[in-house]
Image 1 (cartoon, helix red, strand yellow):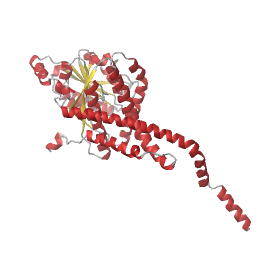
Image 2 (cartoon, rainbow, N blue to C red):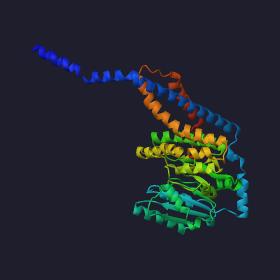
Image 3 (cartoon, helix red, strand yellow):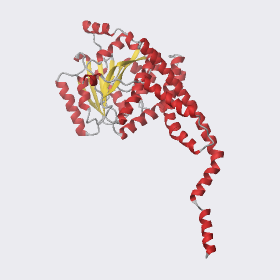
Image 4 (cartoon, rainbow, N blue to C red):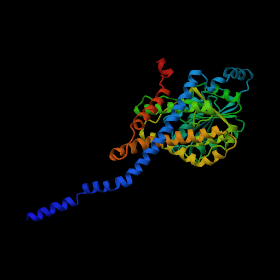
Length: 419
């Protein structure tokens, strides 16, 4: 009986799953895991250094711009152009597009804000592009448009029988309407954006003075930034995008990615670039890159902001981030050859678009954030044979974070200060 018990104990020890897993891990760790992890560490360190250099470069440019007070939009004589417009009454005809999809909570705010824009009523067309699938909501949006129409606003309510192309398809269809033919400029506002009354007076004159300008972009102001920790973190990230990335692009080579809203396009530039395309989920960036390759310049106006809301639920935030992270990589794959072969722009601009705009900011930044910090660094704890240099694992990311923070010091909004 004693021999039977001992035999059973030996069998249990032999087939212990924990021991088997440890033995399997030890057998593959050194010959397989260690070389792969070491290669991943070296690759991530190289990408981190590239990201760090890019952050230092942008910090230097921003410091020069702020210290010298040489933001591009300050060069233009805005007041003189305004006076000329008011004196000669030669206001260009402007189209404002508001694409929306089941926007029950905000449609009144956006339509009301756009309808209140200061501009001669006979030179302004407001176009509401409603792709809503809810028939009740469609009726409500149409009634809201009729209310402003009765107040003298030239507002058009447009719907489609399908959602082909989504936002890009709606904007493309809107530009095909006969009443758009004599418009010179088009402004896009998403359904949650609320421009100030003087928005057109603070953007259109830039385009009138410089015929090479194809786009004037305003920044965003978030009305719900303090709603929760998630919205606060989003505000920090997007403030860096506007205050640093777009300001640097505008100041150095007149190029940055169109944000899809709160921007004024010269219609000739939009058509010259091939119009709206729905081949990726970042149709706004696609249009900006194509217009830039045609030689059009962009201007970012940092002191002009448009109120909007940040995603306050994780589901909405996850959808937005998926679009912003996957879309640029897909667009880069589609346009890489076109950018390289383009003869209308300088080599410096090609380098900026390929390396800085796409590769470092849109691909490496996301890759390092997830793969290096969430996978590689934790895995090195389980594999002591792979050494991770402390300066590159701790100090380099800390420096990048500090550069981001210093470049986007938070200031209270004027409306909050008044309160």
